[in-house]
Amino acid sequence: MTGALGLYAGVKGMFDSANAANKQRRMLSDAKAEEDAWFRRNYYGNYLDSSMARAALRRVEKTLHRANNQNRARAVVAGETPELALARNEQGLRSMENVIGNITENDTARKERVESAHRANVNAIRNKEMAMLQDDEQVANNDILGGAQLIRNAVAGMNWGKQNSDKKEAEEVDYGKVPRWDW
Image (cartoon, rainbow, N blue to C red; front, side, top):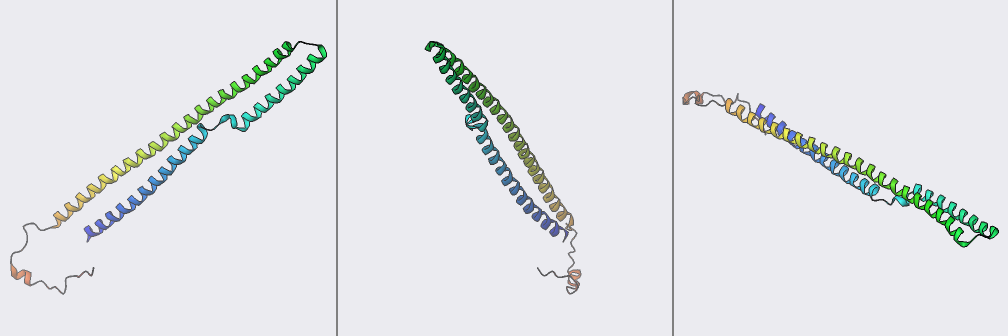
């Protein structure tokens, strides 16, 4: 009876453990997919299309437009040569170049931060997978030991070589008093 209950508990525990492990694997798979989507969205996203970059470009563009208008007006009033106006406009283009250079530097730094966060998240997921595999290994070892213990208990409970060969004693057993199990 004890062996049967132990076997039942072992089998039930095995199925419950398998269900829990499958659920953990699905959750881990979902976490991997979510992390991968986050990384792709943030790493490969167009930084120049971000609201901050667009606002910076608009500010510089407005400033350049205003400066160009002032340069043209000054050239007309003061009688400056067109070359001088072009030289002043060239300074404005250099400032635009500096702004775009800063934006690309920010994009590079952002990509490095995203990649660093992604690496940390991937390592955390791998560590969780490793822990799950170690738990599975431990459960498998415990199942093997439990099965061996059941066999050992079953073998130890038998009367090896101690059976009565006397048929008279065997006939004296009152089967009405022996408990019956209705399975």
